[in-house]
Image (cartoon, rainbow, N blue to C red):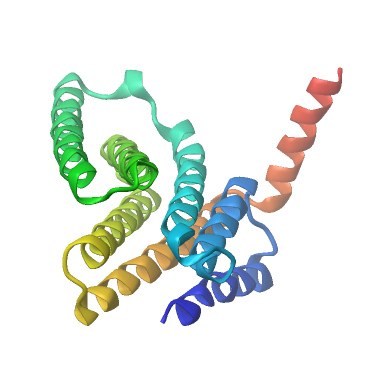
Length: 215
């Protein structure tokens, strides 16, 4: 099951390169970390697979934060919307803390619990910022990115359930389906972004920035 899922990243990547011949560095790093997380069970002993995969997924979600953060204009957020977002964020962090305390009792390996907490917090921050960007812009790209983030968060929750509560084949299928859908929506997001901003324009701006740095 895992080996077949791991193929989706290179398949999507090849299709994208064939059609558009361009990807941002942060998105490439996201794909690399996600792919390594998917196949980590090939390279690490059984007792370290979860820790290794969690580290790689944390790094991959951090790349998504790098992608979405420039679009987060905090001073343009309406005050009422800002208060609503802060309340939602605080509730999610509280639930995360409660679950973290429960997992500390269930899981003997504290490093594993810590990585689960960091991974979950990264996803919460990513979802929070993606939602804020959507409320500010309400574009097709922002909704695709937000739904992709929700898919990754839902996949992570199902993964926790499978590992620490109840292993069920239907949960495994939902977990993988949510993950694949999240990847697909991210590629759709970048397809739209590339149509709006041509690779030649991006290269020109990058060269201009590099020239400024050199000067």
